[in-house]
Image (cartoon, rainbow, N blue to C red; front, side):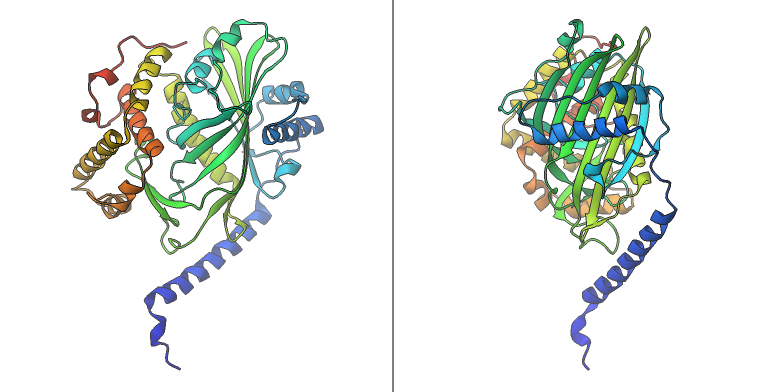
Length: 406
């Protein structure tokens, strides 16, 4: 039998498949010894399930569940780890996470849920792009929520909509995904405290995962996006992976006003992988939550971030940039980034060289939202005192007024 026609690539793929089977076997084995999800009270499980269903429906009246039970459960500060299982995500991996933010809920809402501030501003280590496609069934901006905190809020203020998200490269596989989510926001009072509940439910299976990389330290917020399908993992570059289902319930509870402090409790469900197999383990989700919380706290608690109105002024200027202007700034950015990394080695540096040369297809594939988000991120780095490419911007990007801390 003549096997010369097989070539190296099919053989390497066979080896990769063998490795993949080992991974699947290992995941099956470890799942047998994984910690079981905590047994939450039935009314808590019911409240979580109902919130996710309301977010997914997007139409009809909002029959609110017993949020009192859910908020009371979050007050017990359950330990981070395996999450609360709900029927809607019976085939997904769950996790529970919590952290505290030394900031007022008003400030968090003012910058993180503002109609004219990019929705990923508090989560640059987790989200590349986020914007509302519709609000309450219409193509309209998100309402300003902060002024509502000064009202009695005798009944929760409800916002439903559809948001588009594209995440940053995963820390384990270097893969990133884009998808739409149904969103639900509830602003309310609980025992006299301000509370915001944010719920999301992924609409459909995500776009196929694409190869990305983290350049340098993750806290530098420098991420690379190839636009090429696959995973940035040795032996698995050919794999078409997907986020099959995802959901989140986040509770922001302002437990103190002097000094300001918000307790954030997160219930997360995720099913992702390839060939219909869920490869997600609880520790993957918790690592992602650590990543999210670190940047969220750093930005929300920052004393160098400008006032919301000043942020709006700068972002309006960025939104006014035409496609050619943004593309030229993007070229400058990657040119400078490549020069700065010329003397370094490593997998991420090789990734940069491979995908982001002067006439790279990866640059040509970037759409206007992706280029705009890059400029926004570099401005945010400048405000936060991080290393960025301030030479791309003129003085109009500098904040004109002092910062705010609540």
